[in-house]
Picture (cartoon, rainbow over the protein chains, first blue to last red):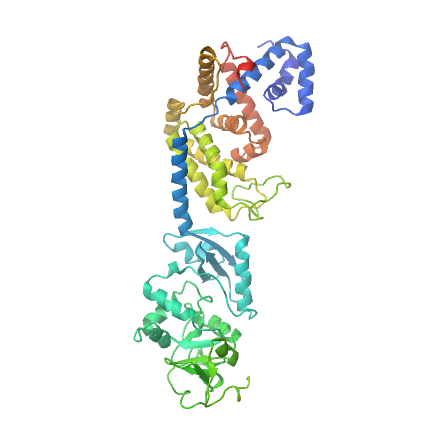
Length: 322
Length: 193
């Protein structure tokens, strides 16, 4: 071994590769030419071929039981993970960076990010039990839909929703009642409280909407104070609320560091009625917003199956666009 | 966009996933067995292989949506498994246990005569001892190449080295096995598939 010929040593790597089926054609050719003239390398070549065969023979075949057990364990852990998994996507929008997240049940979260555009800036990253993972291209459609919506090219988001991030049954009821407020309409916190059968829980409704896990999709921007003021949105994002309502055609005017809905420029629907009215119909303009829903346009009202009031006839005397 | 391990198949690879043909379930079905076998081989303990193989697929699942559609999924899974195996061996005590455990699984051998069977088993046990005693990178490279037929590119990615280094690891492993078998009668080529 020690007195190996130089040419044998030079070819050793190629010889092993060739004997073990790992060489390129050209080096294999060179090896075989060398073997024709070198008996000791021929012997070595044979041994390496045998070594390779034995070595490949240590392939292990675990028992079918062990394999099945491991597979079953994996399936159960995957099922658990799948339940908790939210694939998210963060993208810039006219309203700042937005995160949208989807679980296997549907859209679970929409979130305005503060300044930073990373997951660590989000509430989602801190929700216990949620496994947030970066989503793939399949979330691009959500981004497109949402941007279309924000920019007024789309009037609804027909997404399946996952309500599991609602923190209580009460919150869930508030969110579902809010989700039922149509495009171009506004209702009040007190009105939502009435709709879920808890007319005195006005503050709790406002609090629940403050933590709305699905803003825009669950349109908490359509919920305002009974005074007609916008009151609040996602913490301190009142201008976003103003903007979203503006896109839907809701008439607003400034009111002491806030905005107020211009009731006199909107159609109105009294509680329990199926007819929408002009703001000048009867006493509707002075009735509390806890029992009146406002609509930006006749089309928005009629899209909900409402009919024009037979007294004030908004169909014959429509409001003129300001 | 690169996968979490920077993995890419050659550009010619077809993306089955992007064509909607490969949900994650099929990845599990197709590769769990061989990843499990690989980890049993390198950890020599089926219990630990159980954990590590499950962890491999849980990690893969988390990264699945972000994985490039052209990635070589099989090589990517082996890379994740290899990383986990390397972390596992960073604990020296575990490494010692692995030496002691050599093998608690049985090979699928089809021998013709009892003598040949016995001779084969002896040789095999010897090879296993040498393989289990190899430095970790050589051992992993050897197992990936000889038992799972991975390309050197993929082995290099798994071990965070170049394909040439991966090749050198396998070469060193074969040399050591060859030396370990010195003086030992090797089965003739005809008796071994």
